[in-house]
Image (cartoon, rainbow, N blue to C red):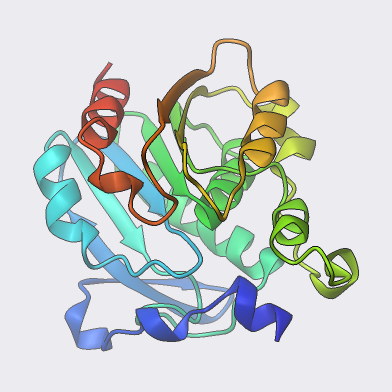
Length: 231
């Protein structure tokens, strides 16, 4: 049950023939989309734990015309095979980054949202990432879960830690944090704790009226990310 709460993949499933990109990682087929092929710069997006990626195909194509964007579903999500776990998703995320880096002479930029912020952090401390956008990020998944289920022994139930705070000191990227003022999932102390250990020059966009699942609808959301990735 804990694994289903962490990785509610069922609602994101799409047929394989709706995707246009397939990568292999550890013998598993990962599928998604390559948006604006052939650009010098690359953008890799790691989504939230219940986020389908198909809605982002036109969005990223329009907003980041100078990037080739890679939207590859986690294993068990979208049209990807396999079963999600922290070691598997980290390995897969590195494979997606490496696929992008091998095909573009310019820098690789990374966006990670919610759970994807934890995935993105693991990539950014292991690979060269020029710009890193963390949307509704947390210090650790375990602490986030403990906030949501205070009466459960979350630290014993959740195997996958996604401990971003523990690796933040290894970052070499420029960082933008986007947070939602009415976030009831990743609560303010979780993002505050992460900000304490991120680089001192980390930029922060605070959207005071936004909620966790809809902050991308705030009029300031996309322009701030566009400016940061276009700088």
